[in-house]
Length: 149
Image (tube, rainbow, N blue to C red; front, side, top):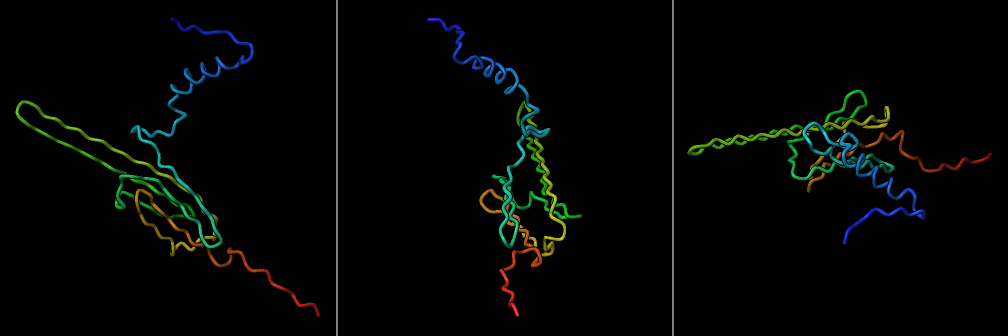
């Protein structure tokens, strides 16, 4: 039994979709979130409630000391650099391996909305949690009834 491409007028874009996917989608590595070290950039969730912003960075296998979190000019920057070197010498051969991983994500914060001295971060079960508490002035205020005289 041989497989042959069949022309089908019902789905005229079907072959071109797969041709584009196979020829462009899989081979166009620039469309993927890969850094120069062929590692993916960690995914980030940003949540907001009445009292705070919460940023969650997925980074399994890392340690809390691998991260650098800083805030400067209303810009929150999360970065990491991790180097690993292995050197093994035995009779007749030497094996030397090394790897380097790094990433940096930056977030522009709403000006004057965050209590920068109260920002906290913790790393738990592969997720870096960064809490950015809001100033009281920007938190939603309860409705106030105005007495009519």
